[in-house]
Structure formats: structure tokens, C-alpha cells
Amino acid sequence: MPEKLTDISRLCIHSMTTKPSSLIESIEAYSSAGIAGITVWREFLDELGVKESAARLADSDLEVVSLCRGGFFPAVDASGREAALDENRRAIEQAATIGAPMVVLVCGAIPGQALTESRKQIQDALGTLLPEAQAAGVKLAIEPLHPMYADDRSAVNTLGQANDMVEALAHPNVGIAADVYHLWWDPNLEAEIQRAGDSILAFHVSDWNTPTLNLMNDRALMGHGCINIPEIRGWVESVGFDGPIEVEIFSNRHWASDQIEYLEQIKTAYLNYV
Image (cartoon, rainbow, N blue to C red; front, side):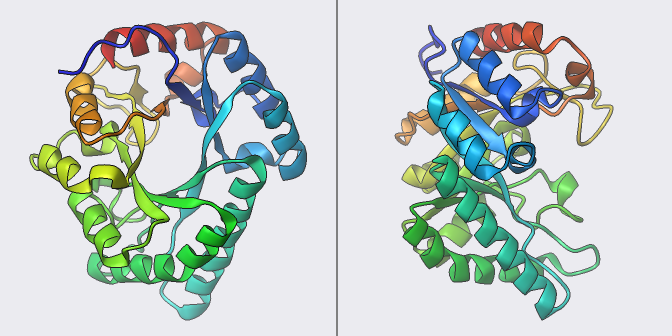
């Protein structure tokens, strides 16, 4: 097990975790709560526009850790795949504008299309985009998603598959976003973390409710589920990761609560169960 966290200096929160709050409200609340970083979901840029959002973020004391999300590369026809490339070019530009060092990728899948074909389309798309991302000073982080999302959200479902892709692309601007919610079940996880090494660009935490009432929007606060988060943090840190620890919780129950009180609950859970 790693050493216990004694402060919140590495704590980052995704703006989607406090979904009812606007970007401005989140910036103010996170700063007031002493939180160090923010990961911005793209839809939160819409209210003020990218440039004004960038200015507000720059005026705050928050580190912009990443932009979520790009991806959704597979399509049944060439025009669909080209449209996906254009949308990801826009995400790269947004990330550069707000000062985010990476775009986190939910890579996509097409119901009825072979997962092997979708993975090929994902890798091909990344091969096209990586030189452009490098020119913009932005990295692309492949996030493997739990297999329950393999039908329409991501054909990349294990860290091993993400590692295969990173190794095949062999580009300095591609890496991995490791999310415990998606990876905790994998019997090969420790070995694949060792294999990933310094290609791990991001580390996301939440917990798995039992029973899970909604496959998308029923994640738990850390320590309120069945994931051994400290053990996985230890594996990630053993390969040199010492960056922000990002809380990403999709939860209808928590979204319905007081968001300022919720931030305090997140801080407590972070210190006690991460």
C-alpha cells in the first residue's frame, strides 16, 4: 500500500462531478475549498465560450489538468470518421486555448461493428491526429472503459488494449488515462500498469456501488464501494506517476445534493480512502 495522503495538494475534480454547477460556479467553489486542480468537460465551455472560459481559468488559482473528452472515432463510413477527426481537432484546439495539457479520449464503438475493426479505426485516427496534437502542445490520453460500455462508447476496454495501441503508435504525445472505475476488475491490472509505465498520463478515482442502479450515473464516493483504490494508486505510483488524482463521479444522487457540502465530502473521502 502507498503512504496515506495527508493533504489535498494533488486533488483535482472533474467539472462533471459537480454537474449542476456552471464552470464559473465550479471555479469559485473549488478554489474556496482549497482544491488544486480542475478537469474541464467540454460542454462547460459553451456558456462563456472557449476564450472567456480560458480567461476565467487563468485568473483562478486552479491547475487545468485536462479537457474531457475527445474520441468517438469509429464510424461505418469514411465521412463519419472524417467528421470525428474534425471534432477531435476542435477538442485539441480547445485544450490548447484553456491551457489543458491533454485531451482525455473516450474512444468510441459502433453497435454491430466488430470491436477489432473499431479498434483499428481508433488507432488510425490517433495516428492522423498525433502530429497535430504535438504541434498544439497537447497530449492524447486513451481511457479504457469498462466492458459494459463496449457496445457504443469504447472498443478499448482493458489497459492491455490501451497499452497495445500506445506501443503501436510509438508517439510522445499519446498515453493513457487510468480510471479505477473502469479497470479495477481486471486480473492483469497490476502487470499492465507496470507495462504502461510513464505512459500513464492521468489517474481517475471514484467507487463502484453495490448494487449499481445505473450503469452510467451511479458511481460512489471513494470508500463507499468495493474498489481497493489505495492498492491501485500504489501500483500507479510505483511506475512513477505523481500527478493530480482526479475525482470523476457521475451520480444522479450526488448531483441532486448541495454541491458545496458535496465538495467537503469529496475531500474527506479523498483523504481517507484514496
